[in-house]
Length: 164
Image (cartoon, rainbow, N blue to C red; front, side, top):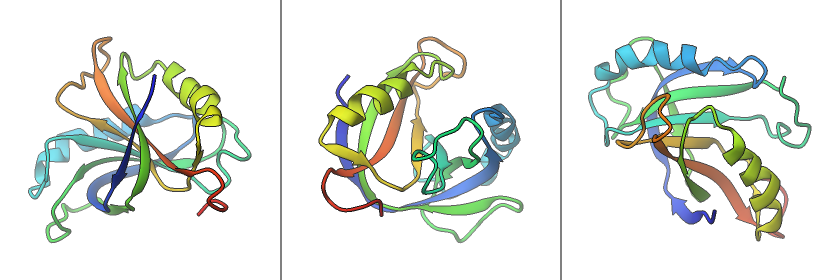
């Protein structure tokens, strides 16, 4: 599976966040809280949902399933002029990403094992410290083996310095 390498510009996002770990994964709780309120966001740029993971700089260097991180349920917006009460804003920095198209259940983590265990070590890229995200577009279907989503992994060319 070969990713598409893309450079994106900064994105403005609105949504909700929850701290979790892989051993205490609360993604369902986060989306159940966000989805009923999604329509309150009135300045969406697309109908896509964006699931974001914000990791500490040492998250992957000292990896443990107990490492905490923030998971966000968001949509992209034109501006931050009208934020629903109780929701938060997040600016996703622009940069270089490896984009993997995933078809199957979102609970099947073999795609991430491939990305981090096979593709990344043998590629000409290194992981960069920026948020990771998934775009849940019109082909995304929760708990459906035919579901499709895009997985965006922040990268930089190898030998271009330390993590930024």
